[in-house]
Length: 182
Image 1 (cartoon, one colour):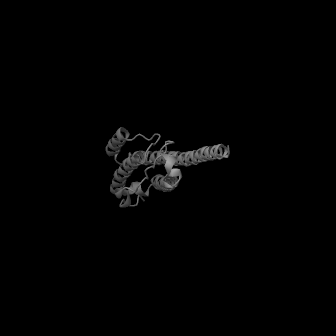
Image 2 (image 1 turned 90 degrees about the horizontal axis):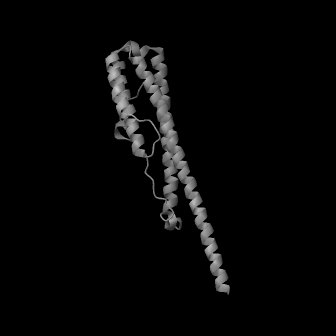
Image 3 (image 1 turned 60 degrees about the horizontal axis):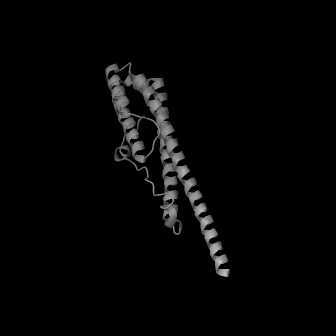
């Protein structure tokens, strides 16, 4: 009889421990989803600022701006992000657009002196900083989940209850060497 009681207690402890671990994994996973959503919102806002910047440059180089707009619209899908690769792809598209806008601005010094251009460029840089912060938060959230998944004894059940390691958003080489957008 005492073995049955001890066995029952052990089973209940294991059940409650499993539930506790699952709940902590869910909380960590939700933090990752929230962080990815924040990145999407910041990229969307940054894209709006880049679009405004593109509108400002139309008066100086209408044909080039039309071409940039058409190219980017064909490739850009600022929506809900599901993976770090999606975020990197969208950031590359925005960086490509900014590079082309900067090339136009270099050819037209009056554009670079325009108050609206300066203000809008400031907004683009502000959103870039917000995206950078959101990426840091995302990677921090991924680190917490990945650490929890790898730690014993939770690592024994992580896969069984549907949790696996997540990928980080890594710095793209082109972004590391990209010139300042001011």
